[in-house]
Image (cartoon, rainbow, N blue to C red):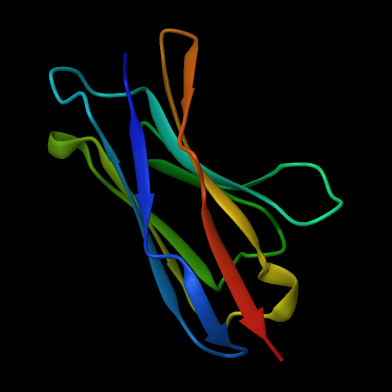
Amino acid sequence: QVRLVESGGGLVQAGGSLRLSCAASESRFSFSAMGWYRQAPGKERELVATSRGGSPRYADSVKGRFTIFRDNGQNTVYLQMNSLKPEDTAVYYCNAEIIGIEYWGKGTLVTVSS
């Protein structure tokens, strides 16, 4: 069973930065895609950023502020979040996919104060 473990969440003031990390327990193969989703209170889970085949994709709300990058050799994915806004407050979940099978982490809370 593949496990994804997120870290790096916390409390930050608006305009600040955080870096999230996600490490997979499996390193014998590379995931087709790895990425980040988030779920704010009372809202549905939404895509933040994904990386597939070296091509990143971002939600419009985070373009220019967030950067996703991967260490394929270690099956690790990071999310550098700059210029954070209160509306970025959410639980951030790591996602990984291989041959159509998706795996999820348990999430890490990011709280941005105004």
